[in-house]
Amino acid sequence: MAGEKQTDTYFGILADFEADIQANTTDKDEFEVDGIRYLVTAIYPQKIKGEVVGYQGELVRVI
Image 1 (cartoon, helix red, strand yellow):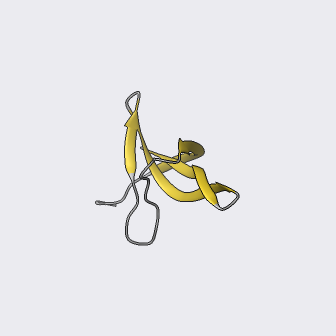
Image 2 (cartoon, rainbow, N blue to C red; image 1 turned 45 degrees about the horizontal axis):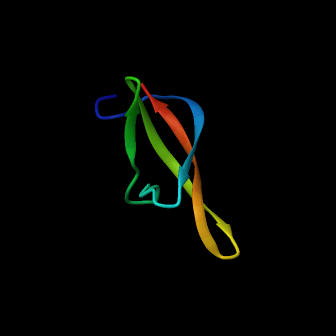
Image 3 (tube, rainbow, N blue to C red; image 1 turned 60 degrees about the vertical axis):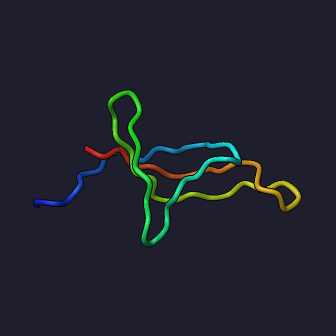
């Protein structure tokens, strides 16, 4: 259908604590690496003693 994105295999992402990655009901980040586009579907802060030290997330490859 027009306007729809096809997605492929699920991937993961790790990012440092300074990353600004969005994945919520209104905003989802999309980026390209080596000519392949990815959509961030979920992002989870990783904390040590209550302090965010990084982020782990879920991606899908956009076709």
